[in-house]
Image (cartoon, rainbow, N blue to C red; front, side, top):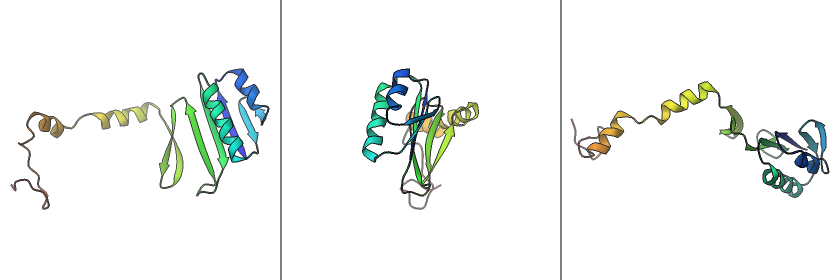
Amino acid sequence: MVVIVLENVPKRLRGELSRWMLEVSTGVFVGSMTALVRDLLWEKCVEKKTAGRVCMMYRTNNEQGFEVRTHGDTTRILVDFDGLTLVAVKNAEWQRIHAKRKKPKATENLEKENPDSLTQDSDTSEGSNG
């Protein structure tokens, strides 16, 4: 079984998909097809989408029993977590956390100014002790 969800895409793309699948709700298509047809429909969706988002779910032999593909709007991203696919939603909290990660550390600035002034403290390092 294959499910394709279209958001804010041209009506002609929805019309083309309705030739192969059932549109059970606006922008939600369900059907059963071979992997080749599924991949060709995915390519067509990605190619004809001018704006919006395309999401495809299909049955496969993995831990979850299905695979997810997305293209377009980046407010939701797929994250692999030990073999499980999770969906991360980019909201204000997500952006705040990732903004902190992008800030340079103080030691990075020191290394840029004078790379020879820093020493390493680990036992396996080649820096000076103390």
